[in-house]
Structures are given as structure tokens and as C-alpha cells.
Amino acid sequence: MISSLVNIAQETREAASKLALLSTTEKNQAILAIAAALESAQEEIINANTIDCQEAVNAGIAKPLYKRLQLDEHKLRDAIAGVRDVAKLPDPVGQISIHREIDTGLILKRISCPLGVLGIIFEARPEAAIQIVSLAIKSGNGVILKGGKEALNSCTAIVKAIKKGLEKTAVNPQVVQLLTTREEILELLKLDKYVDLIIPRGSNQFVKFVQDNTRIPVLGHADGICHIYVDEKADINKAINVTVDSKIQYPAACNAVETLLIHRSIAAEFLPKVAASLVEKNVELRGDEATLQIVPNIQPATEIDWQTEYSDLIISIKIVDSLNDAIHHINNYGSRHTEAIITEDMEAVKTFQMLVNAAGVYHNCSTRFADGFRYGFGAEVGISTQQMPPRGPVGLEGLVTYKYQMCGDGHVVSSYTGVNAKSFTHRDLID
Image 1 (cartoon, rainbow, N blue to C red):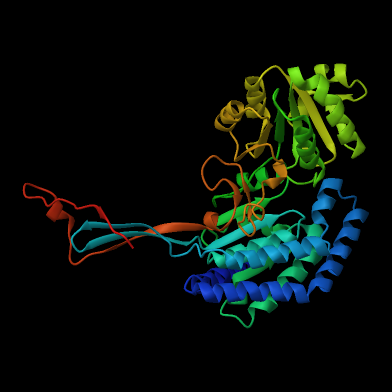
Image 2 (tube, helix red, strand yellow; image 1 turned 135 degrees about the vertical axis):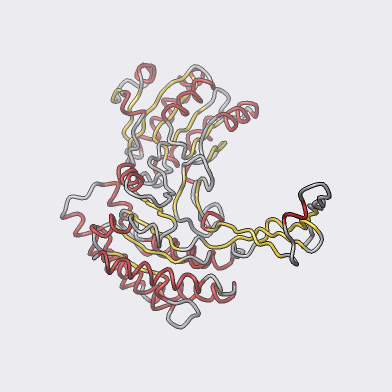
């Protein structure tokens, strides 16, 4: 297995090196061919997903994971639309961020270039394969995919369609590879000679496992514990609508809200109304002592609740005394994913957005907007909660690095040292 996986990685790297030389037009043609092939294979893909879903139910799959696994015609349609959106985006490769004259005839450029080969390991959510491949090709990267065992049939059908779409384009189908066994994950994580970046998408435990078992750089987030803080100067109706959407629109997503923080001065008015709206949508409420005094017929929240990503129709509620208390709670328990404040007080917004440490800090809008497609990235390979960039939904810009290119005419460093040292001009040039 090790030998065959090395061969796969070598083939992917070779195909990716040629992909990096293609024009924007050639890459876009390949991406559009993928979209067309996925549409043609729609019935086959959905049938494969139906088999996966039934087998997952028989195996006792957890409800949040099952929701991620499901791929109906609407999800597939949106994923294909995202592929076409990627084709419309500017090419991230070959962008010049520095063009500088170091001295007469000595020119420096900093130019964006592909990373090389991406290793993507994801649980459930088969449409992730579609998003990732389109972004990888546009950014000039090869990609090795490893989906969860529960999505094996879906991923196989998707990659089959993608490869078929690439056959008549300038992109070698070998630029996309699919691994199918669990044992291959550990072997993939050892291929630091061939794989340049690992992107895990899945549970907290899964992402941490990947991070602990590879020397390859890892881009991923381990939790999606998102908060909404309803400030004392919040618009009640606005706060209810945003909270309900953030919880129920897709509760299994990592950007769904898990904890609701409410300023004490507005709690008596707001809490019964938002509680009624959430319960109407079958959301289970868990509250601290102050919350239980206002809505008593709910489950008490414990310390564990503040640390939990439910990925389900459950929300914990806490009443806080001030904006600073809310910020402290978020920075203590949050996962640096997405946090929101609901208020009409712009000074409070400024303080919240400056002091909350998260990849996304929102005002008066749903946490569910934290998504590459909704950001206009076309799609995303994942969401990064790390402090260093890329951060948040990672699109094309997170899949390129850069190199420095310098051209001279016999220039040597010794000319710029010593008693008669020449001076550098360091003059930025206009392209």
C-alpha cells in the first residue's frame, strides 16, 4: 500500500507541475468541463449518496454527521454553481505583489505560485470534493482526496465525473486522486516529500488527530463554537430573526450558533420571545441560573455546555452583565470561528469587533454567512481558525504561496559593500 500511495502522490505531483504552466483560459475551460460532467452524472451521484445514507443509518450514524452526508439535488446544484463561480474569479497564480528595482538593471519580483499538492481529508459532506477540486485546479494545485468511509460511494461517483470532465481538457485527470481506505490516511500524512498542505474537514477529534500525526503543514479548525451576543441596545425582532437563522438554518454546520449571550437589561423582554421562537423550531434550550429564572422549564446549562459544539438543534443561553462580560466569555470559550453582536450601538460594535478574537466577527447578521460561497470565493477548501493567515473561509488566495524572482546583468553583492559601496535604489516600479 505504501508503495502504491507513493506512486499516486508522485503522479499527482507530476500532473500538478504541468497544471501550473497552463493559462487561465485553459484552467477555466477545465473547471467548466467539470461542472458540465457533474450535471450529466447528477443521477448517478445522488443514487450513490442514497446508498451511502442508507448504509450510514444502518450503521447508526450520528444525526449531525448524517446531515452532512446527505447530498440532494439542491446541494448538488449549489455545489456545481460554486464550480462555475470559481471559473469567473481572477487567477491567483502569477500575481505580482512586489516589482522593485534594487539597482539599475537589477529587478526583483514577488510572484504568486501554486503550493503543489493538497491532501484533503474530510468526514461525510461529499460536496466538499467538488468545491476543493475546482479551487485546486484554478490555483494550479494537484489534490489527493480522502473522504470518510460513510461517503465512499458518493465520492467515487463525484471523482469519476470530475475525471471524465477533464479528459478532453488541457488538465491531466491525474491531478485529482481519490483514496478509499482508512489505512491510507496515516500513510498520506507521512508523505511530506510529495504533499505540501493537509486540509482536514471534520470533527474536533478528527482534526486534532491529523494535526498530531503529520509533519506536513495543516490548515483546519478543530471546533465551531460560535456565539451571538444580544446587546442592551439590540433591536428585538432583528435579534430573534438572526438567532433563529443562525441556529436552525443548518444546525450541523460549523458556523451555526451554539451559545446565546444576552445583556441582563434586555433579558426579561427578549428571552421569552426568542425562547418561544426557538422552541417552535424544535430547538432544545439550556440556560444558566439567570436564564432559568425567566424561562424556567428548560434544562440547566453546565460548564460543559459552554465548551460544546452541538451541531444539532440545541443552544445554551447565558445572561451577562455587560459587553465586556460577553467578550470575556467568547474569548474564553469560543473557537475563534465566527462571533456576532446584535445591537444598534455602533460604539459597542466597534469594541466587540476589535476585541473578540475570531476569524469572523459580525454585526446584526447570521453566523451562517461564514462560508466561502457566500463570501464570493466561489467555494472554499475549509475554514481556518488559526491566528496566522489564511484565516476564515479559505478560497483561492489560501492555496497559493509566492516566490521571489530576481534578474540582473552580472550584479554581485561585493559591489554594495566596502569603502566604495554602491547604494541600492530600491525603487518600486509600476506595472
